[in-house]
Length: 111
Length: 121
Image 1 (cartoon, rainbow over the protein chains, first blue to last red):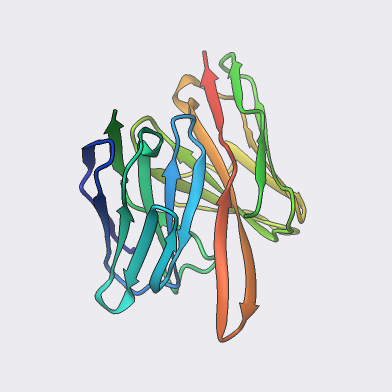
Image 2: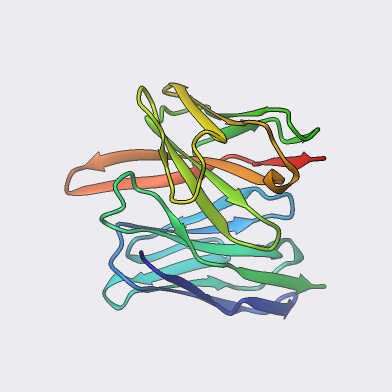
């Protein structure tokens, strides 16, 4: 099946710093989503971005489908940004549009 | 965004009992829903695909008699962990895709419930 690799696995930032999280995938995809899992376990949708660039406040994402990677940018980080960030993809032949998750990036933003 | 709810949010039960978890799409219909399992400090692993009006599709290694799935309506799927044992303790999360658009440019974004933390004593 498709492989999804996220980097870095862990990241510690000072409040106010910027960061870039990367997601590489091994095959073409129909769908790519970025999620933030908060300390209570809730997965929050950040971006639905199979290709192109999107921005939402301090967050933005870019997916280059032809090169099989996606980037999530966090600017002026805040302590509330802490948590795990997951990239998940839906390969074309997955049938019911199932998502395959990467292992995540654990982000800790300190005050 | 779309809203998916789960109930209960947490449950503690004795070994050997069965536990039912409900997943509802509150503001959209979902002919398909998905059940995931997440162990501490790990990623989400797909367990099964729940299909309204037909049998669920289970991933390799997931016991269908252990994890019973019923998709009773276009907004409700249930997961029953039968004869639960301590090794079944985990965080269970459901999701539902909201689909739309044209055949040439469709979207298929998945929304997740808040999860159910199951502890089996």
